[in-house]
Amino acid sequence: QTVVTQEPSLTVSPGGTVTLTCASNTGAVTSSYYPNWFQQKPGQAPRALIYSTNKKHSWTPARFSGSLLGGKAALTLSGVQPEDEAEYYCLLYDGDAQVFGGGTKLTVL
Amino acid sequence: EVQLVESGGGLVKPGGSLRLSCAASGFTFSNYNMNWVRQAPGKGLEWVSSISSGSSYIYYADLVKGRFTISRDNAENSLYLQMNSLRAEDTAVYYCAKLGGSGRNVDYWGQGILVTVSS
Image 1 (cartoon, chains in turn brown, orange):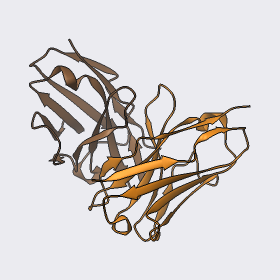
Image 2 (spheres, one colour):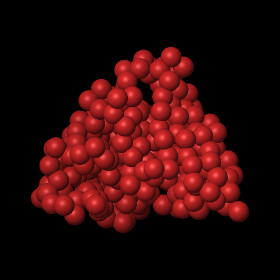
Image 3 (spheres, rainbow over the protein chains, first blue to last red):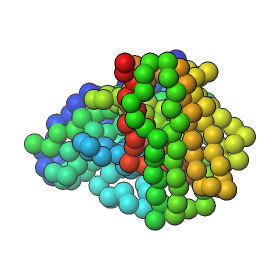
Image 4 (cartoon, each protein chain N blue to C red):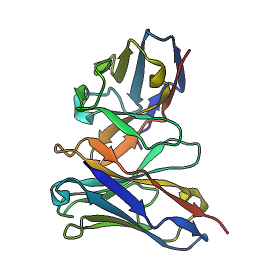
């Protein structure tokens, strides 16, 4: 049973940079897991940000980027804006199954 | 504009059944794989089930296998989730989600529908 782990919470100052990570208990996360990242604000449906590790959707702001870092998938926000305060979820494809991480609550303070 | 609109949620007793529907528009529904994802109150996202564009490939999370059935009607641009033997822990907002062309990315989400399992 794959378990995907994210930082429960992170705090960043406006204009700063922050990196969220996504780890698997089965080993290193690689591009074969096709990491996806989503943003969810209270009372709203999730919104897709990144897929296949580092590909952006047409609506994804340029300040969001995805990568692999030290055996984990990573989402980096550069030049954080107040509206980036939200919950962020990663998703890994594990064979035929899909596994979400527990989410990272990002506070912009 | 891609739109996914869920319906069919509500209050059901433990052991009961419910059928969720998702009406899709703004894209060629028959070309894309689809997901159901749920979120219990105050909790994170949980993948429930996936179905390929032509219904040939269907997958379920272990927690719902044998109780839930995903299906689709490409002529009606609709996705379904038949939920049987419902338990209190199935209480959640259920989202319909479209997968992208690679089949390995979720790009659009519905607004979600609440299912409450309680006596």
